[in-house]
Image 1 (cartoon, helix red, strand yellow):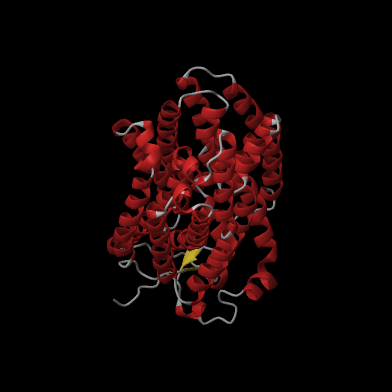
Image 2 (cartoon, rainbow, N blue to C red):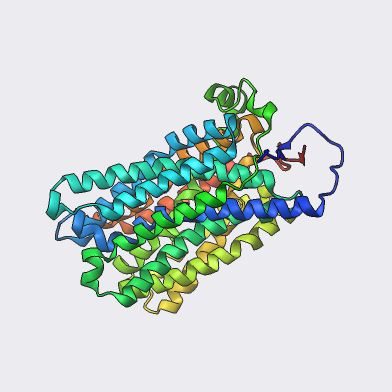
Length: 442
């Protein structure tokens, strides 16, 4: 198949021609195909977080549940440390070879990592080698997902329809959250079918096996994608190079890292860590916490297109300022209120309120970054900047929260998240009022 190029540029100021019906259908199909692979990638990645409550004793046999979770959270964070390398490697491939090739490789790597984890022996069987192998698999997955975000965000921003890029690009987080939601749903289903002992013995392996199988389907779908990177952008001497990125676009890079730091921290606080918070701190049963998070993630997923469409009307900068401003004000009250909650419905309402605030950011997370870089370094700029901010602050969220809880200073974590929201607000002020790139299509 000959690749169809429809990469956005920044040079023309003339009014672009309207899309034909065929072009519209093709772009929407491309959004769906890219999104499906994104869903599988994030399902595989988040299955680890949601099964940790069950497999922690198998790899870290200590009597203290918080210590076990601390060890699994440490491995979770280690996976994030590979993200900058993945962001650089896959960003370079996407800018120099093509977005499609990069997305195919990343989903294949995630498939392999999940398959190995599904088959790993336990500590009882092979001793300290078990957690070491778990760590290696997690690093492999971190490398894959580090490349997935930047390339998918870039691709979806480039195929999205003019004037509705916020709406269509929001489907990256619809499928990212959908991956989390499916991970929770699989756990809820397994909890209904298996006993607690069976879940800890072997049931936790099933979601990893499911993730490996569905990744094969994602590979087939992604093979149908059209390339968006133009030949001229690929052949640029700066294409996919660190030098080209930092020589001309270092301010944009720093800005993206700055607001991604707070965005990633609050996102992981209210998604992956929240399930453990509801169990360890709020005192809800594991199954009840899973049900609360299932409902909350479903609501969160459905919010994304609404907030994405809102950004098309009010602008990305205003959306980002609303996110960081409301996040600064509301984080401590929401987390403090959750601490004393006894009703699952009240917990659900508070978590959804928090996720609504986060939606101002996540719905436009990809497009607001892509709009700051030209095509020749777009995937690299988006992927690497996101990965750096995410690795340092998103991946460490659980570890920092659990460490402070173990030290008897849990409320300090609430203030830490609020402080990072202030940082995000200050960097959001640096955003241009109008996108520097992605104005028109070639």
